[in-house]
Image (tube, rainbow, N blue to C red):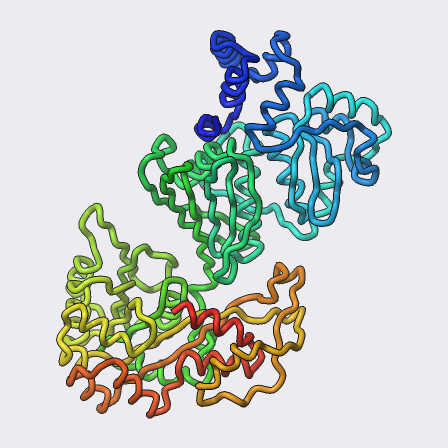
Length: 568
């Protein structure tokens, strides 16, 4: 039955199926009610009650089971008086929803339909609360509303309580689910979900179908957080709205789809990359919020500190290849864009090939991979070399063909910037060898490799002193700069940081600068361990040591650095 609910934004067919299963409705009555509801554009559940086939309490119980909410059996005396004063009966009758209880971070509503769920989610989010629901019959809600004529303010009062913390000036620049009614509940719900993610500096929005509900999560500073869980019946409407916004095929649910949305928030425009995939439970969507500020960062904003100069020296060379390494989500693209911003000038012809183009940079020719047309990294690189480039950015070296062409470009008078998925900087050499690149070619072209991670920084509004666990400090005892820490601090957790203790992120880096001795080691195809030992002997600061340095400076905590390093 939940499968029927997931097939449409309207759970009524699933409710009717449940009633047939329980013997409260015949199959013929079900079909007749659905036909009549379709012809009259009316609610099938309302017709059940108006035709005298079922009581509204029976309908409410069935709807509650489909949506996963309990039935409310109370009356006006069970409503929180303070919360009740915020509502006007004439509004709630049209809603249809009644606020029942405000306890801690949770506000409970009594509803009799899906529109009540949508409004309740919006109101709760404006208040910074979590919404919970109980199902009631329409007659029960009207009875309660009729008994409370003393209410004097409006639902807008509830809205205004959260208005100081939430800006509604998010303009969606694509299609609308209902062009005649842009304020329809599902449109407002999707727009609010995006606006809230922008406000909380989320990098991704995950909308995941579960068996009886949707789960919406944000990724903030690299960590996933639950936001709220709408009922399963909203799945199709939410996905349809998102597909219309990104100009995708709303009828296609069996194949993956990728699109792009452009939104305007306050004074800045933001692009959102969106991906849909079919799962066993329904369609799943992920929205990547592309913060334009990330494309404008300079090298001195990455967290390199006094180690910025070696990187600048590598970028000042007229030819060679510079590699940025790390896992997905470690900030490699941001680092490459900062490098391009440093190099961008009228005297340079800079061309990039990316999959996809995440941020658009003024003055740089950016190409996007298109596998449908055969325009891969390798094919794009060949075309770029005929465009008289000085500097080439390759979004990622994934295969032998791309690696060979990038190395060849670096040997023939071009500066090439790219990324590799390796654990550290020195492992970039072994990865290229694994891709069948001859060691002597690597030695001739590699100017340097930069390994990096992103660590969350301590929220400055809730700092407290603490003592890390002994096993955490034991891990850092191997660092050559260990022992220079004084008092350890962390974030206690507050409203500004979602009670996580962290706000924002900084990079931790290790830089392998290729000199004559390193070139010889690469030519001899020495093991990575030998190369790494040589670099450390020459003073290369490892990821752990740079992380510890940022602990000493009070930017982050030992536990956070250990969490990031262990992701290797």
